[in-house]
Image (tube, rainbow, N blue to C red; front, side):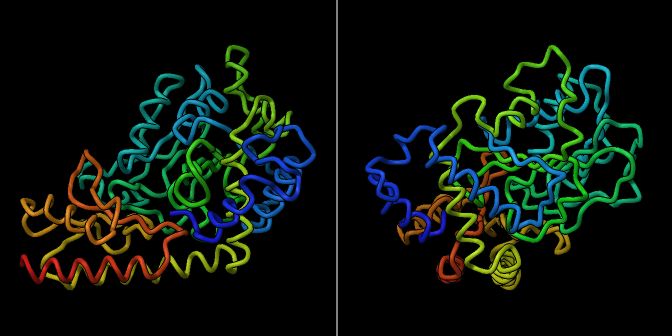
Length: 348
């Protein structure tokens, strides 16, 4: 969900942005008007996460999945190697893509627990000479989230934070690269945000296409080619909204309150279950199963009739999944719990 206030502001400005007589959809990305949106979005993000001048902030296209290849192309290349933590579907896809461009060593994997945990730090095999160390901060499908920043010495730390970005405070200074697709917590699909330590820019080899070289965008204010302007604009509105709500600290408090309430309802029900141990549970994505899987179609059908959307689990695992991104109001969680309790009463 996007915050309702953000969508209402975009609606009000859609035909005439700030008296210009044109829509954001019609505006040149090189105009002074759009440059003001760029400048404000970057300024707000630097405040939200306390990002200092040692870091570039890039607004790119292709979604977060594009970074599965862009990261190794820029940091490792054919002669380098990388370490990956394998904790679920998205880290697995990133790992497989990286193997096309560099040597990859799996530092640790939670496959043995069906990706319901994070491997103990003592089991990680970290190569200090690696080009970078990669992990996925929140696995949306399995509902597993890192509630800590991995301690690694040597290689730059790289993280895909698509599904929990801006949902909690973050010490950016501990990372080489953080990237996040917009479509979970700060905008619509089509935009990916990259926060990158400046000393890592310019490491791509001569055969890397310009559109996959971070230096291309760092040298052109993310405007080397036409960006996803409407997605960027909505991201800028969302950054401003988060600041108005009290910043990422307020987003974290919301996430803790909402997710704990839903997990308690699942754990206390005797009808629903979640497979993830409490210390690894995601605040953003709550997967759950019913006591009888044969009831799944009826649950999804009744949920939609009750106005509850997008509760089907990922096709690879089935079951149900509730996503509690920043735009989700408390009332949405309350409505889901009320529905779940009534469904369990009728079918339990």
